[in-house]
Image (cartoon, rainbow, N blue to C red):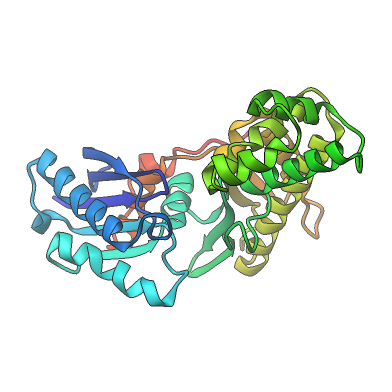
Length: 329
């Protein structure tokens, strides 16, 4: 019996799944985050080793039973000086080389589309889009909050905080966003926002990104400034999808390119509605819809298993491939 291990790492949690070639999940494990940027390489090594050992122990199996494993690790492929160390970690945990290490976006892509051709756009704390068609692959975005991450929760929050500062100064007329941010954060004076963000929150990525919910809440009550921020965010994400699609090329049969979305920004109905409408407006040269938006088929941890199966040259379980349903417009 073939057995595949998938690890989906993140900044706040790590999920490991052991499944057979038929798509039956044998064991699961969840643990702390494993981002080398946030926690360091030693912490990542500990999580990789613990996750591998515990999921195998839970299933009563050994590392020798694993046909192939995929470890999706945050930040992989983004630092030449670190990738070698990340690549070696699973070998220590497994005791063999039947594994692949890649960026955790690969697990998200494989899960959202069941391993089929298409594009997955992520708008969580950060943002990026990744797609595959045949042997062609392309990634756009994921440049960190200091360089890019346009359309992400962190980017939306920064735009909202900047708008608040302009309203407080009188450089911009006050809209509901101003009062709502004061209410949600509990600040007494407008300038207290500086201390809140820089001292209390320490400028932390996740903590700042969480303030994007104030922007989505303001947009929901008709705030024009907040609405413009969300519209701009959607435009940035659609641009990422468009560029990936341009590189991957068209479906030879003329079918629209499948697109899935994931990340916390899409959990807001208003934001998701904007995105769905914007994607639906995209047309090819023949005026037909260019994209077909689908719901994610599988969780990222199952996506890591899908990626392991594909790397082993085995077929992805049919039930997993067919898990996506087209969104109705």
